[in-house]
Amino acid sequence: MNHRETQELLAWYAAGTLDADETSAVRSHVDDCRTCREELDDLAIVRAVVAEVGADEPAYDPAILERAMSQIDGIEQAVSAPGAATRSSERRSIFAVFAEWLQWSLTPNMARLAIAGQFAVILGLALALGTMRTEAPEEFVTAAGQANQPAHLTVVFKNGVTELEMRELLLGLGTSVVAGPGATGIYQLRVAEPARVSDVLTALKAHQHIFVAARSTPP
Amino acid sequence: MSAYVRLSGMADNEDKDIALVTRIAEGDKAAFRALFETYGERVFRYVYRMVNDEGRAEEVTNDVMLEVWKGARKFEGRSKASTWVLGIARHLALNAIRGKQLVTVDLVDSPEVADGREPEATVRDRDTVKQKLRVALAKLSSDHREVVELAFFHGYSYQEVAEVMGCPESTVKTRMFHAKKQLRQALKHSGLDGMTLEAVP
Image (cartoon, rainbow over all chains, first blue to last red; front, side):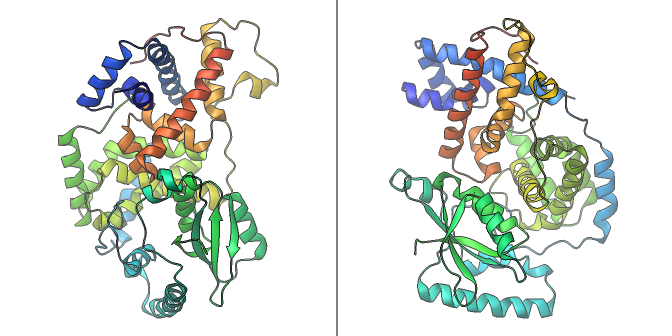
């Protein structure tokens, strides 16, 4: 293992969470590298201080679990939606991605119809314009060849969201509008820092003002 | 409270956790209780460091528990149960921060912040090093600090950190690279680079 590779793993070596092969490879380099040994000393201090910060924090209250235990009786469990709660590099159909995001099974029938109609329009237009892809593996945006290219996302805001709310949300996430709105409210966004595109997408999906968000190709 | 506890990583624990989530998906409340007797504190600690408000952290932790109950059938076991739960926690904590306009502040009340004055010129004092480092930690970007805390406080491997944060392992390594660079800089500025602290259990 060379110096650069060792440097990448050194923090986890200090934390003791590398597998046996990596541990052995790092150790053999560190034994001959003064720079890495000095860094390990520093990382030991960092680790100690990070642990101590935790000691100052409020204690966990087990009553939180007791409250949750009393609440789950009235909560319906979602039906199975493959891959919904786990990350996967496998490509899934865009319908599966969106249906899971919309928590389809928990949506009332009338709302399903409304959402289905809106979804169909959005999907049809997006596919016609060739602007949407299924969720790609994360490596797509951070692979070496893509590192300097801005990442693009497609979003649709919920009804009633004001221009000010849109602006604050987009600026806050370091994104800018590069196209749109289209007839059905689709905006194309560019994420200033490609390395953060996953975080931005996660934040958009979770935000109360966003109806739907997905990756897209540049307009 | 335990300072540095690695709760996952052992294969048998992983199998046990996956079995618990499977039982939760079948409506098993005892499994739900067992899962959060193990991970409740970890979720709370993680969320607290993101929202920096005890009451809100308790609310979000409660929401995480309910979300796990609701969504257990969606868990397919392709990631560890512990990272799946923490991924939900991250999602809901970010929601709480961004949706409710929570203002996060420094994690530590350093003398510089609390008193508005520089610490006394005892830069070679061991506590000052810690203080400098705490301030440096608090000044890290949230993504960088999160990687450091997941690695050193929660004891997650870089693969697990990537699962929790929903980003590639290469991104996790890059974030750690930048974080440790800033933290080491703080150590150097303290004039105490390389000083040995007492081991933390």
